[in-house]
Length: 216
Ligand code: DX5
Ligand code: ZN
Image (cartoon, rainbow, N blue to C red; front, side, top):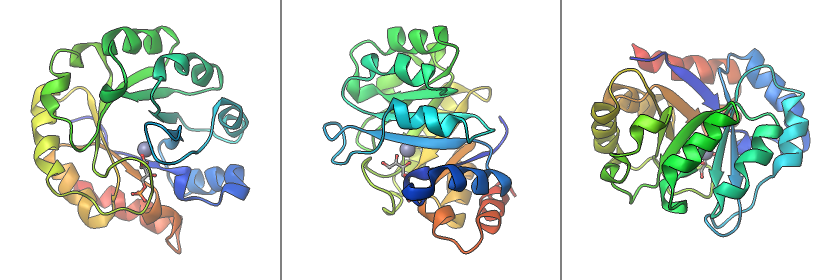
């Protein structure tokens, strides 16, 4: 199984101090920083774009994981790669040509991830997994932080893990806390995105350590 990685989502951080929040959470042990990009179309919310990402890159010493929740991912992979993204994931529901898009992301020097909404079957990615580096299984409907983990997604995590084998990464995002992290890791996840659980905690380090304990 690939290494367990903890990826705090800055969506739940203090947006007036994003650079400092990234430093604090990295000092507390974050492996990646997860950046949620929403467009008000694919998701009923708006967040940030490439200029903000480029500023944040200067405050970040670990890989930045850009999660595109937008209807036109083809138009934004290059701007986000130029802004310093290390990983770029896009939704299977948002593109007609997932393999072409994954290849473009790889050509830009980034890891390519494909994302499944809760209502999307793992069968939809069966024929594209060879062309991507990681799968992100949404464990809430995208759009907001602080939502409850959808337990039915555990079965999807199991099915995706058996589909992709033990070399590729399997990320989960939404409603991750110490308990759901353990369930998700047992089902086969190895990258845990967590927003509220980390940024609403009294100690970022304790919260990250608790998530990392999901492995045991
Ligand atoms: C949801 C985003 C998540 C979100 C997770 O649309 O993709 O990354 O920040 O937040 P929590 O951990 O609070 O559920
Ligand atoms: Zn996300």
